[in-house]
Image (cartoon, rainbow, N blue to C red):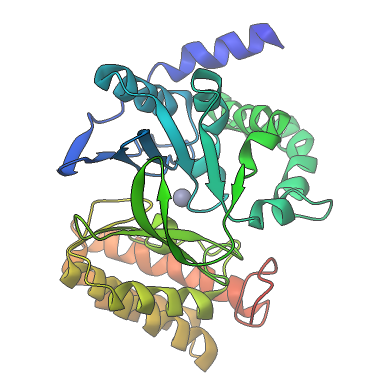
Length: 321
Ligand SMILES: [Zn+2]
């Protein structure tokens, strides 16, 4: 097992994380790198607080958590707190490595992770399938590495749970920095966190915004749409998505409009392909690339329309309406 982990670590050296970017004084983006064939890493935002750094989301891969730790080292500041926007493992797998380096760091998260880790929860069901995945001869070595990373994270699953469970929206001090902490009642998971920083007018949204196609695997789309409307109601100037580039208000509103249209289309019963088409047309002002990319976006959305309709317009793991 140790030998296998050493191989994984050596292979993981291959991916380069973009250098940190200061979005505003005291607010830094460590963007999730995208390596074809692998699962993504979510974006990380680091706030400089009076008691140390506040790290929002910790990525999936070693190279991403290493980039966070290098940032702390370069600034000679401790990591005082971790905030997980949601429990998806591309946003929380690095918790363990960060806490190993900074044992005093407190994890702020909703308790939705407890349901994902329960006996019939999403992550437990997925873990039960890993033997099947690894035995599949069509999997590449990279695919298998990704499965082993998941198994390793589940081996230390308690690092995914909050030290400070966040149940309600309120303004609170985290790591010595005041932030507006907002909790959704269903959205990407059955309770997500997003942040609004009044000082810089930056909103940190986790996967409420995934560009170009949202991940609906554990979603409550109606609640998600309502959460986007709540974000819109704040006077933010820059919105940081879970994946992709920071957005202006206008850009966010294009996404919000496309998302709302998609939810309507799921419920209206139009053919899935036409929901994908109209989503991609609405999103077109933000879509760089060629017509082939727009078509891939449309096809990705059409897939999710079918997935959501099989479960009455939401994912099977959505507890809300
Ligand atoms: Zn994500």
